[in-house]
Image 1: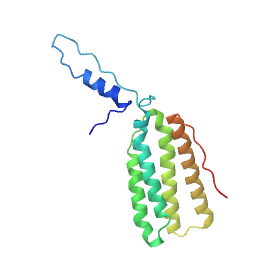
Image 2 (image 1 turned 90 degrees about the vertical axis):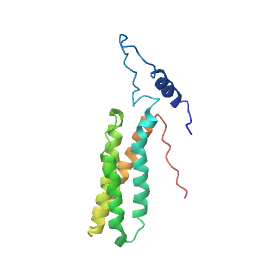
Image 3 (image 1 turned 30 degrees about the horizontal axis):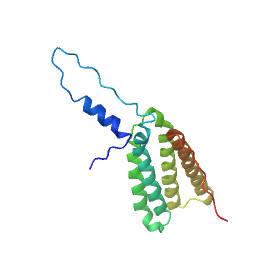
Image 4 (image 1 turned 135 degrees about the vertical axis):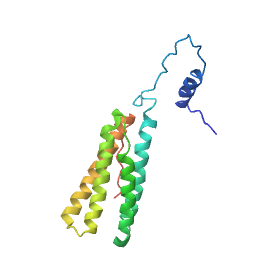
Length: 157
């Protein structure tokens, strides 16, 4: 069932209005395109990127709780998600967000691989810090792009 939300209704109306026929002598006016970075479209524009980040976050949380024997399969899944993210060509307003997403994903994968290869604690901590920093930068950029205020989580003592 199609739900016409307030954001979809103008797009639907635009599509319906452009369905008329033109006679051969009548010039066809160019159809209006919606800026993917506009306030009206940005939540849909960012959705594919953010959906992959959420899937990656879920998969990395699972991987961090697996025994090392099961990590290769989990890493393979994380790499699959990263490749999907790499294949996205973001709108110009999402280039910074996309960069933070990919850097975060690479840091997590590289750190898990380093763990499997017996890296020292300092190397692992560097990787974890980079991953956390990039995830934080991603969150801040996402909030900026969407025009929302990011509220830090409070930690109970």
